[in-house]
Length: 115
Image 1 (cartoon, helix red, strand yellow):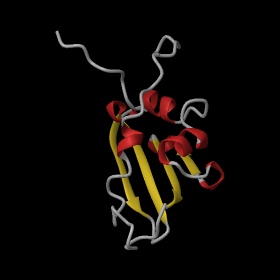
Image 2: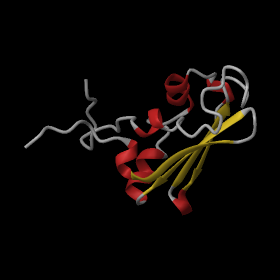
Image 3: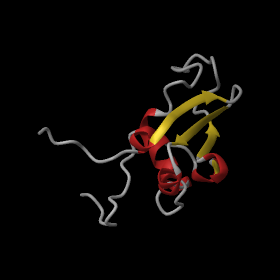
Image 4: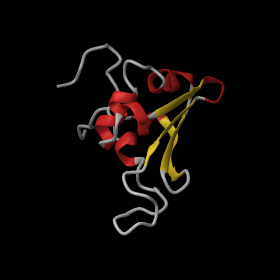
């Protein structure tokens, strides 16, 4: 049997998406499959402004996070690194920004950290 990698947020989600939220902001949404997955994604000790800042190279103080338990959704917004449709913009719709978030490994169920 082939060895699989660690479980990621994308594995636990129904959908992970990103989109432009106007010319100056990116919004990403994690639609978790169930309350267990939501509990992991909404855990502030795991997914927080610092984690997002490290993934995307943005200022931690400018990140906005919204946890919506009734929908099993976590929404994250932050300023775009360059304004939409500017000369250096490589993703005008911000449609690919979600990939690092979806690939984020979740902590093992036993609480140990993978090395």
